[in-house]
Amino acid sequence: MFASELQAGGVTMECKKYRTAIQDGPIINVIDTPGLFDSSVSANYISTEIVNCLTMAEGGIHAILFVLSAGNRITQEEESTLDTLQLIFDSTILDYFIVVFTGGDKLEANEQTLDDYFRAGCPEFLTRVLRLCGGRKVLFNNMTKDIVKNAKQVKQLLAHVEAIEKNNGGKPYTNQMHRMIKEKGDKFREQQRKVKSKNFAAEIEVMKRDLELEHDEKMRRMTQLLERRLKQNSEAHERAMRKMREAMGEITNKD
View 1 (cartoon, helix red, strand yellow):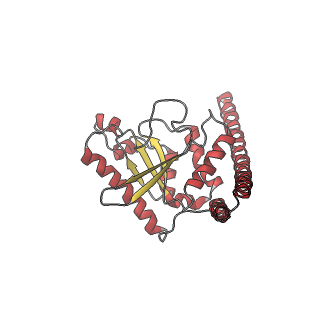
View 2 (cartoon, rainbow, N blue to C red; view 1 turned 90 degrees about the horizontal axis):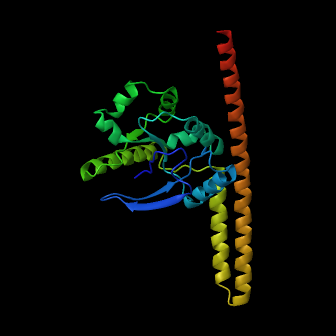
View 3 (cartoon, rainbow, N blue to C red; view 1 turned 180 degrees about the vertical axis):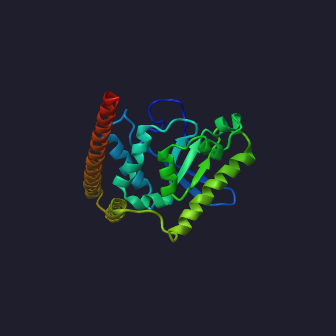
């Protein structure tokens, strides 16, 4: 269900939308996004994909799945993602957070549960994330062929989504940027509808082209805004890391 590979860069390189129907349950749309701090791609590319993601989720976001690999060390990039999400959106995004751990097969091979994994030494970052998101977490075994086991882990995830919906009064997450994209999308579709109702083919083609150019320009400006925010956050993160390394160097020299 969730992409997981042993490689340095992120698995997902562009936003993809998956649609599935749960047996005796709802139809679910899942949008897979690139890593927000994947060092192999530019801030412009990530900004474009975030705008694409929000465009795909015009109706709002019912849950944010923060995917980590159980057993692997938390990377600095993964830690930075939390701050970046709050920068792009706002702190209320954590009300929709679920931490999804892949690699359940590895824990099972060692006869461990997720709780055993935490008791062995939960990183401070994970402790903070789980505290901020109300402890919502679920473990996925990507390799299982057991239909019953697979259905159980999907059910656990959906139970968290339902709890989020209940806690937020049934309202999906939206922010100002999200609402702007939806308004622009609604306006664009309405203008297209009006254009199509006209009878002059040549005029229709010109108007359609103008509408598409206007819409693309608005999306480009929004992407540039996001890119500036990402770069500012990345620079602030680099400054903080540099100061921390300098401080550690001073401590080492004193010793």
